[in-house]
Amino acid sequence: MRLQNKIAIITGAASGIGAEIARRFVQEGAKVVIADLNIEGATQLAGELGEGCMARKHDVSDEASWKALITETLAAHSRLDVLVNCAGIMIPGDIETTSFELFNSIMSVNLGGVFLGCQNAVEAMKTNEEGGAIVNISSTSALRCPTWVTAYGTSKAAVLTLTRAVAVHCATNEYKIRCNAVAPGAALTPMVQNLLDHDPDPETALAAIVSQHPLGRLATPADVANAALYLASDESSYVTGTVIPVDGGAAAA
Image 1 (cartoon, helix red, strand yellow):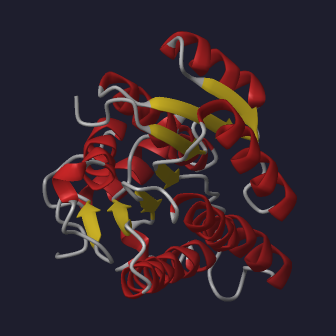
Image 2: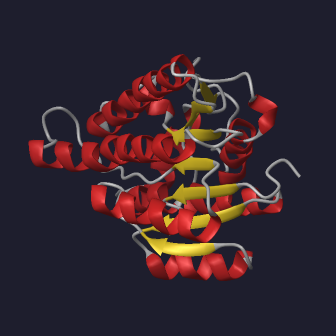
């Protein structure tokens, strides 16, 4: 098992890609802290995944919430080996229709939450003899941003820069901590489904999204979870500061 006895925190893990990453990690032997604002969903998933998993209500944009989450994880498991920053929000809006208030809200979760996660994880991991791994979930929108999600794409692009900065910082300080990112293409998660549900023509909207991916389908949460597993495991021990697009060729098209 590639994550045998590893202790992992996954944010945004109550549903969608985060939940699938949690399932995959448990299959590979990890003990997972399922962190999400949706504590009901997180608790249900923790019960499904069994002993060794615990659910915690967590607001990624709140510094005190991060301090509490790390403290509770260390109290329960004595260490932290893996952090997956998966929590995020996507609200449509181009440069003309996105209010500054909305822009700040999206940045607070999608970028601020990752910043706080990396900062607290580095502090918790840097004394580990075996180090640790941070995996940030970005988006293909960071590489090729549709105009209708301007704030979202901007936040996810900033996550890539943050990922590189954390990776180099840890390496130059001789911390055994790697930091990488995954950039998924569109996946049929609750977040994307919500956008489709509010479109006047969901079928046409879905077809338009699929057409942007040369492989001719959307990503599945399992596609993304497999990439996160690789970056979290020792199989990627010489990989840091990089991004793996899991997008069916969308960024290259």
